[in-house]
Length: 259
Image (cartoon, rainbow, N blue to C red; front, side, top):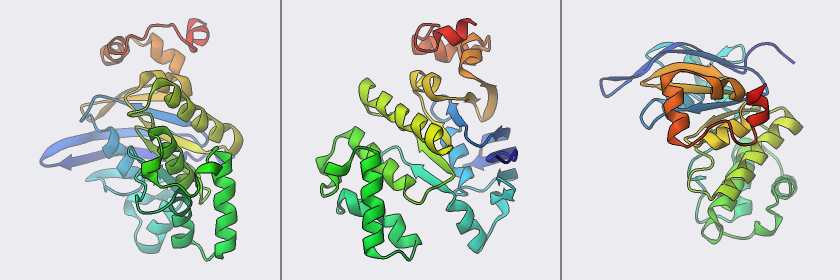
């Protein structure tokens, strides 16, 4: 496995509406990590995510995807770099007038020259992998929130990306369904070595899935730690987050945190 980070931010500054949203943000995400970004609303989480696929461009600094500087890429090269990503949006962003099968097939129809028969086979396999084979002919409005998120994930995975970005993947879901989404993220790492970047408010989810957790506050990264170390952090922003969600060292992470 290459030692080049999957994603690297170098002193990224972004201003929006005259306000500094990212303030010299620097970090690296190793290949195969589940890197979770947490922070208060308006702290810069989603803006950070958008820089990774060049939906936003830094005012200063650089964003790297592997050995390529995506923040300076243009044209076909930018398109090729974006193709290395899959994205699961907070709302799942499914097209309501398309069936589940057609939603998942859409990237294959837009990005490949596969025959319809090959596309159908790929889609069926992807839906089966996520337990959605019985939903192929349904429309998004017929699905629960959790099933819609799984369909969104199937679509994000259909082009076999190296990296998947998740924007609040458990938002609006009940705790049981949220944990199922967490398990899917972990399974992708175990089975396929996919690098995952997760933006979330859900610290219970973050502690369960992350290899490392980054805390962003007022546009700055104030802490990057593994879950067990995160629980022991004395940083006031981290402590405030933990206490706000009634998290102590109880839970699935307790044994590791206590060592």
